[in-house]
Each structure stands twice: as C-alpha cells, then as structure tokens.
Length: 237
Ligand SMILES: Nc1ncnc2c1ncn2[C@@H]1O[C@H](COP(=O)(O)OP(=O)(O)OP(=O)(O)O)[C@@H](O)[C@H]1O
Image 1 (cartoon, protein in one colour):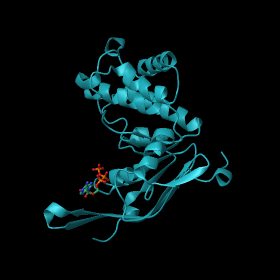
Image 2 (cartoon, rainbow, N blue to C red):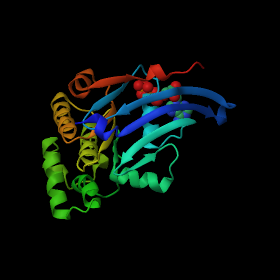
Image 3 (cartoon, protein in one colour):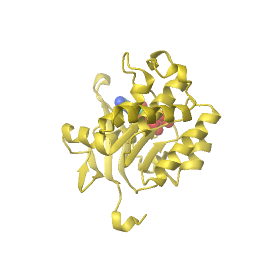
Image 4 (spheres, rainbow, N blue to C red):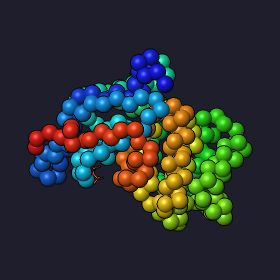
C-alpha cells in the first residue's frame, strides 16, 4: 500500500471536546484537546489509555455521534473528503452507508427480524441479491460458530456472546473502507476471539483501515499495528 500516493483514509486534527453537564450546574468535563492522528488503508490502530481517558468518546466523535468543540475529522469518501465535524446529517448518513462502518459492543436488535436477515441486511442495502446475501450471512455465522438452529430467530433472547457475534457479522459482512470497532470481542470465548482476529486480518488485507478499542491484550497484539494513547490528548481540567 503506497501511503504517500493515496493519503490517509482518516485524518483527525486539533480535535477538542468538553462535556458540559447542564443538569449539574454546567459542570465541565474536558475530554480531549488537540487530538490528532492519521489512519491509512490496511492498518489497524487501537485507541489506548486507562479507563475514562476518552477512548469511547473519541471513537464516537469520529463516527459523528458526539459533536466536537474544535478541530477537523476528515474521512476520504471516494473522490471526496468529508469533515465529520462539520458536515450535514444527511451527508453523514451517506458516509456511514458507503464508507464508515461501526461495530459497537452491543447489538441493536431489530424487532422480529431473524439473525440471518439482520446480518444479510447491509449487503442487500449495497444491492447484492437477497439469495447471495443470505448465503454469505450464513457462511459468516457458521464461521462465528452460531448454531444454525438460531439463524431464523430474532436475536433479542440470545446470550451476550451470541448477540455480539451477530453484531460482528453484521458489521463485517459488507465492505467499508473505514471500520470503527468498540471492543468487538468483549463477550466472546477464546475460540470465537480467534475467529474475529482472523476476520480482522482479512479486512486489513482487503485494504480496510480499522480504528478500535481493544481491551483484550491478546487480540490487540494480534491485530493492531500501533496504539494511539488518548492520554496524550488530555487537557488540564
Ligand atoms: N455523554 C457524556 N456526558 C458527559 N460525560 C461523558 C459522556 N461520555 C463520556 N463522558 C465522560 O468523559 C470521560 C471519558 O469517557 P470515555 O467513555 O470516553 O472513556 P474511555 O477511555 O472509553 O473509558 P473506558 O475504558 O472505561 O470505557 C469520562 O470521564 C466520562 O465520564
């Protein structure tokens, strides 16, 4: 991968954020100040630092769920570059559909939709015929050791680890050049953690850039090329 030719997929610069708690007499909680880093195709980078350092908050800023007070979050979207910090909600939704995937820790269950369809949905949204999308969803769920008897059932009643595997399959089934992952292996046993490590390695080989929070040291060491210490972006309260 020629970095200088392609440039970064994600470029964060000068990002600052302070939470203001209006229901607590305007108490101010500074999280980051002057946060800056770049992410290139085919690499996996972990956000590191102790609990409360601001890892999840920074990830949510990149995804556009949290507003920033200052700075730029530039994401390459084909021939265009989108500044998540400033773009319109409509453009952000399109960026998420085409370019920036997010694998959260928990599955947001869709009522009455079976696991196989939950997983196939992003591919169908990309225009893949339903039969092919469902077959690929089945392959992925089998790889993640989700028993076939569960595939037609809505995941609402699944165990934590089963739901997380459905969530990972849904988050990884379609190609998105930038993937954000928030503790994707938190509820998984050792065997399934290894499956996820393999899936992440495949994404990297396909040129996907991954930014994530990986508390599991073994997983982090297996997949991450470097760690960004979020405490470097801390500001004095
Ligand atoms: N929505 C919010 N409103 C107010 N404060 C928040 C909000 N989200 C996070 N914080 C505060 O920001 C700080 C950073 O939280 P964050 O969840 O980003 O840390 P973290 O590094 O991901 O921690 P952990 O490893 O424990 O998940 C914490 O002090 C937290 O209380």
